[in-house]
Image (cartoon, rainbow, N blue to C red; front, side, top):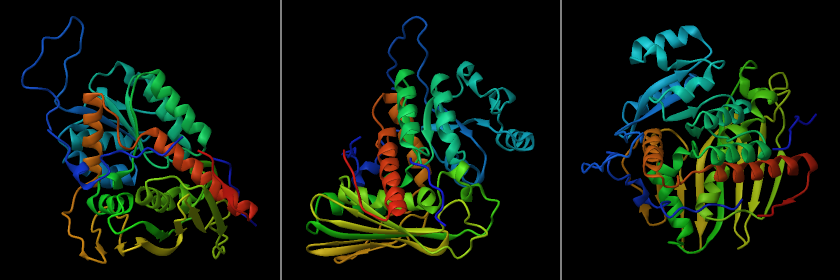
Length: 376
């Protein structure tokens, strides 16, 4: 039986999608020559306060350590529904009680000037609600990927942020990682000729039926929504353009006791207007982490491609050699600069909505067993 899948603007190519984009500029958000402030105007901050919304494994294992390395922002508050976690984080990280919120009093963030940005790190089905509530509270938002569980939710999130004059960014950390930025440069600038084929995979073994990721109501889908989105992204930033057609097939379910509600695996193909093709696969019962490309005059490979660290790559011209970076620290520092300087983020809500449109089409193709055209 097929897993139940509910249905989920133009690709924004930022000129900073080159390796030079890692240069984030000065870490100081306020000029040394301070202009005189107008009456009632809030002073600019040297470091913006971030509140983590949801204290799960990603917030604890990745974002918290990253916030200890950031220069343009810092951990200022938390939002959690677990009192014991709140107590532990307050003690360990010197967070004042006034900056600790739960999901009921979350809207009171509007009264807290310590917090400028909220980072929504909740199950997928909660992204829209807590992004919209944050926007209404006047806070800028980073929302973890996938942006939401439907295109309509993405539209609502973007509208809420625009209506409340706050910025919205999606947690696409690999747009700040040098190996992936190099692949984007090779593909988009055709450094080895026009791209012919792309292949990618991102899979891992998930064997716990209690994980929210295998419950459609919370996740919106299986591995495609979770890690397969990286493969979709990889193809898009390699090409620098949107696909015009997708086709997909569900893989065989080997553990029906776990994968009752979402796909266990899915394979997909993205076709581009110039004739290039990208093949992708993602699974909760396999291992795979690569992004490869073949061009007219050469090739490249990243393996692993999407990891938090230890990314490695080579091209037909030799081994890639870039320094290890903290992707999440660069991502958050860059967004803080965007907020402080009122400039666009390279990973905006429109990009997240674009990806949900593609993912929706992939599911539609697998459900109907036929290709689906995409209009942009």
